[in-house]
Image (cartoon, rainbow, N blue to C red; front, side, top):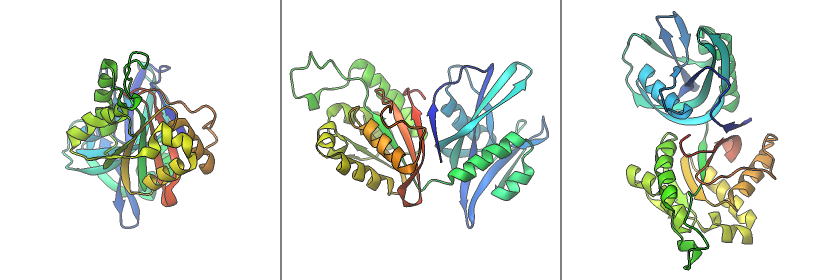
Length: 306
């Protein structure tokens, strides 16, 4: 089990991102490894960030460029650091599910192989990649994922004289919603649920409009119902975690810390302090579950840009 706070690293001269790309196989999963003719090595798809790019977007882009596969980004697996000519390099790896595509050999990667985990261990050229694969194997492929999102910034409460549930997003909140649309899209959502307040629904509107998804309202994700019955809200989140695939759930600041803290405590994720769970506006907790809706990983995206 693991928990990670996803933040942009600063203590590195060169930043790169990649993934343990996997797909279902008859007896587990297969892992994608690529051969780089320049180095004559076998590794996971990865590459340096483009200017202005953040790590999760770089990971998905590099997967597409080096393997031809569309990918659904999952939990963070870990970081690798090593020296290069330009100084210290940091590579951040996610787990990512292959969603289809066709490999085309090129100058950077001239061969792609799908291998069982044991065979991938034997072929990988670097010990640090073997360690990353071991971490992925410990996590296992997810049975479900819940992206628990806090709504974007809303207009001033003191200047709003109507029903607070109808208070809309501010201009900056709408901008956050546009960024969240792209970030949440990396996780391959299958469905979207939202707490009743308009600012929650408005936060996911760009996403559902682009993907053509329906939005289901869930009162138990709102602060009013949660304060009345936290146990019922937690039970409802566990129900969502029991549905295969990826669910985006938009909620509020008075709800998310309690839900994440309770899930982490039950799963034994001691790295999460139940009394200090962050939930900034327009942030996301990516909660990855295994069999039995057991929480396997909890990754915090503080910013809507990733």
